[in-house]
Amino acid sequence: MKGSLILLLHAHLPFVRHPEHEYSIQENWLFEAIIETYVPLLAMLERLVNDGISPKLTFSISPPLTEMLNDELLRARVRRHLGNLISLSEAEVTRTARSSLGPVAALYNKHFKTVLNLYTGRYKCDLVSGFRQLQDEGHVEIAATAATHAFLPAFEKYPHIIREQVDIGIKSYTKNFGRPPSGFWLPECGYFGGLDFILKEAGIRYFFLESHGILLGNPRPPHGIFKPVKSPAGLMAYGRDIKSARLVWDASEGYPGDPFYRDFYRDIGFDLPAAYIDQFLHTGDLKLFTGMKYYRITGATDSKLPYERAAAMGRAIEHAGHFLESSEAQAAQISGFGFSPVMLSAFDAELFGHWWFEGIDWLDLMVRKLFNSRSIGMVTPSECSATYSESDSIDLHPSSWGEGGYNAQWIGEKCHHLYRHLHKMSERMELLKQKGRSASGRRAFSTMQRTIKQAKREMLLAESSDWPFLVEKDRSAEYAASRVNSHIANFNRLFSMAEGVESDPAWLAELEARNNIFPWLDDI
Image 1 (cartoon, rainbow, N blue to C red):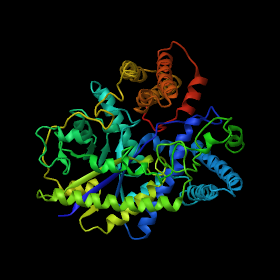
Image 2 (tube, helix red, strand yellow):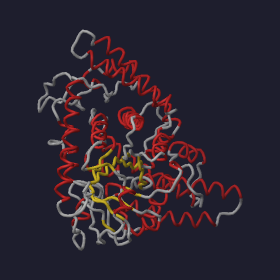
Image 3 (cartoon, rainbow, N blue to C red):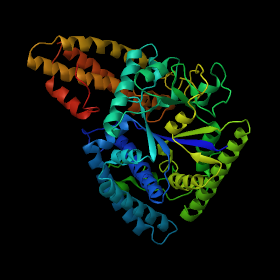
């Protein structure tokens, strides 16, 4: 019996857009992901297709990310940033010419130029269309996800919030990919009982869970996570395989920690004087990641050895072979129980290329090896769902893929207080809709429409799971807290304007121009 592997890459970033600043360090999150992950990933997938290999990868691409990828201001800033990096890397090629770091500097210079040529030439700055074309040709499958990646279990008592997150997420998907989605990625794999019924109402046919969401189900699934199950609503649910995930993701045992791979944290943005970097990046002497990292992981030491590309690629070849052997062995073992297993390996897309520099090369090698395997093959969830239409039905268990497996990473000690504001906003939003419908006069109605639409945007942006996660993990916590608090404050002021307490057309216009996610949002 031949086993099946679903390899899912979840592509998501929070909506960050600051036209009020010439440079914003948080916009770098998008630039890094485009330069190090999304463009190289698209190019790799196209190479596979050109070589006669249909990769059959599964993606979820979040609405905030698609909005940013489509935004003309951010596209211009990506081009500007790439041009600055090319200038910096050319200076570094000269500076390091007589040292052991010279070949690495030349590697980055070539990489930045290649990405710029692909981004502006092959893809015309439109990466979403690149992924859409691969799906239209049947080489990948793309699942939808929630509008602003809200952690849905936090709103279990407010189903209208969840429906709105799901419906807007699906509408975004349909606008960007030209078809309704079949599958849905639950943000952070956050599930609670009854959520599948909301997904079914929206036309979804399958979704994904962390492993214990299925393993602790009732009754216990006879095939564990190695065969999709049917949820109470009749949707197919796939459980993440921890073993294969650990090979890639685990910080201490996974492939990316190999001493020959590039060290992520040792960046010239911190090694070299800020004034020198600022000559090229024009960031105001800020210390920041440039993407130029000259050293390999080496080990648990501050004394790092220079990065050697050939040695790193040798390890990538070995690790691709090891993943295939491990997957084949696991499939063979499970097949002994009388059924063909399905293994779901799900990761953040930015692991590949960004966090793990060699990750996209590993993906390329691994997919090629899997293509020639006789015991396991890559499949999409839709293909699997058709094969396993008679799956077991179980009540799924509440779960997430966060630390601890449940909700603490998003509703923890540092952030639980935010939710009373988020819940209150949703209640007041209903009042705004009623008020909007009763507005009289063309001008008053138009202003009310704009006010309510922007209030809805601010509410959606405040609901993003990224902000409580960053606060709880103490990563960019000050920025994350300021973002969620500013969206709450903006909403409250817009509510006051709708109530007639104040009027500030200039501020409303500025807010519409800055926080412009989902320009197509329905009117009242």
